[in-house]
Length: 340
Ligand SMILES: Nc1ncnc2c1ncn2[C@@H]1O[C@H](COP(=O)(O)OP(=O)(O)O)[C@@H](O)[C@H]1O
Ligand code: SF4
Ligand SMILES: [Mg+2]
Figure 1 (spheres, rainbow, N blue to C red):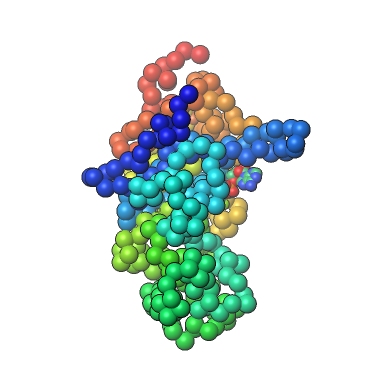
Figure 2 (spheres, rainbow, N blue to C red; figure 1 turned 135 degrees about the vertical axis):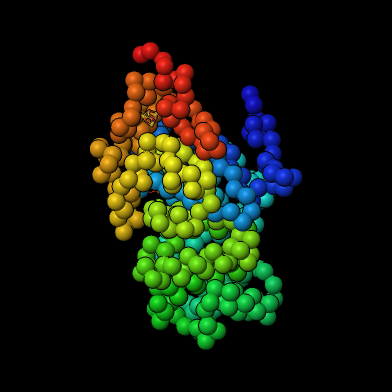
């Protein structure tokens, strides 16, 4: 049998340099209703996902609520162990470093800065915490790094002794970003980082993230249901449906010339301001399928306006069409011609 090592021999290189983030065939299965007698029913929340992001790039992941975005980000943060597959950060495999060392390199920025900040700790303490946990530097160095990081994210020094409840939503999100940056990470995973904020404040935080990316050569994975945010931030877009990437390509191509019928429907839909509601399905007829019983063949076929006979029988393979990867039979001539 092929060992995991043979299967994923090493991280890929581009121009002789390792990729900032290289994910190969990542799969996460939850066993629903598992007991000591019963294996449970498998739910493939992330199903054979591969992803390559170069240094300094922003990749946005879009898809309806329940498609697997948070599970994928937890895997990338090393918070969950995948069922199979490999994750490399700048050429180093996640399995080769311990969880703590990995956490220095990949940091999260979550949606709601209020619930993710401890209300009983001052801003200075919150930003310093990761340095204490990871035992980085002397107390003096830690203080200096907190002050530097506060300045970088535009937080005035006088706020160092303030509490989260004394700050505005935008300031709290700056604290959350500072807490992630104080570790000097290489990759930031931003899960709906601005959706809890007012529109005017959203723009300031997005601008700040763009500035920080240029200044620090950071790589972002950006999860957002807001396509205008995606358009502003992303170099590449990955469209996720029931645990799989159905379309991945340069942002402009995916947003202006979507190839997959699901991407086309998403772009044609009216967006809701609440990320918990996910992307609406007004153009998609039937609702999101049961992930415990995914449809056979192409998982999108019960909702697809362009479905052909082959679509319910055969899973589409990944094809590259004009520089975009797409999983759809429409682009495989031989599949479209199969008599069924
Ligand atoms: N810890 C878990 N145990 C069982 N099922 C889970 C767990 N976490 C997520 N799921 C399921 O996995 C699928 C993907 O969920 P999630 O990653 O949260 O999607 P998203 O972030 O896109 O809304 C959903 O069907 C969800 O119910
Ligand atoms: S493979 Fe078929 S059902 Fe799936 S998206 Fe393409 S046309 Fe639609
Ligand atoms: Mg989520």
